[in-house]
Image 1: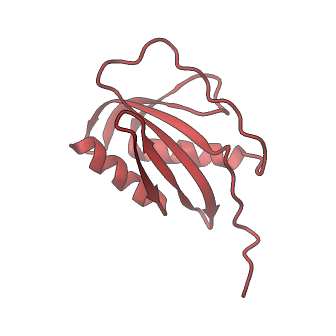
Image 2: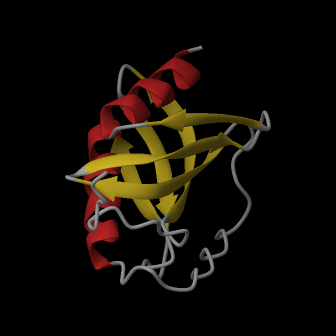
Image 3: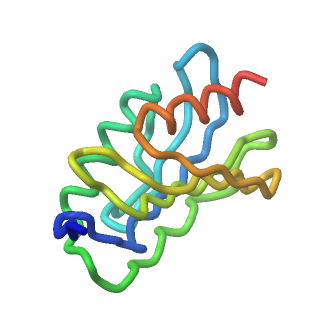
Length: 125
């Protein structure tokens, strides 16, 4: 049995994504993360993944969770709100949970590609 020293759990790797519009990978929404002092506007799934990856690089894990920055103002009616919990990152592959807060549903993902596919399946409906 070989132990993997580079697989570190980190429960502070959580972000909130609010999506107000989505069509074929193009979206309008915001990302909130403890490392950001304000909501960051996002316009595509690839931008979301790249931004999350750069924020994970800044994490000093393991560590205590940082609070999510509170929402600025009221969210638009019909906006989809998701929590992304990245529990592990090994060799640039993510494992975690996507929680769709509006519907109180949860899905597990094993890579960034799976996360993109989950978003697309949910938002394309």
